[in-house]
Amino acid sequence: MVLNNQLLIEYKRPWKLFTLFVGLSLLIVGSYYMPAPDWDISISNIMAFFTYLSAAWSLRVLVERQWKNIPLMLFLTWFSVDGCYSIYWYFKESLIKSNYFKLAKTADIFHEDRHNRITITSHFVKNSSSFFCD
Image (cartoon, rainbow, N blue to C red):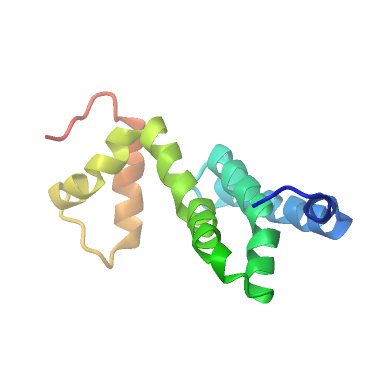
């Protein structure tokens, strides 16, 4: 992916900046109204930033059928959607992610019971300094 003038022009288009602002605003508002232990403002900003940088080029690769760039496009798409999220949480709270399933099993939480999973995970996040799973 080469940063050329055409790509830089794409980043500066007012409608794209506006949609980035609206989408990021919805993510931030959602983190307050739909609290989840792994959804915070920092990861919302990081994921939006990487998506904004890679989306235009990735779409151009598909539309113009630049087959040699497909592997890089797939990697950048994965990184924007999941890779940066995983890295962020690896460094932020690796204990929470690594012990989530052990905690859920200990608490006897079934897969279908979303409310209880969120409740027990939120409790674990708040008390992670005093609770360790082996």
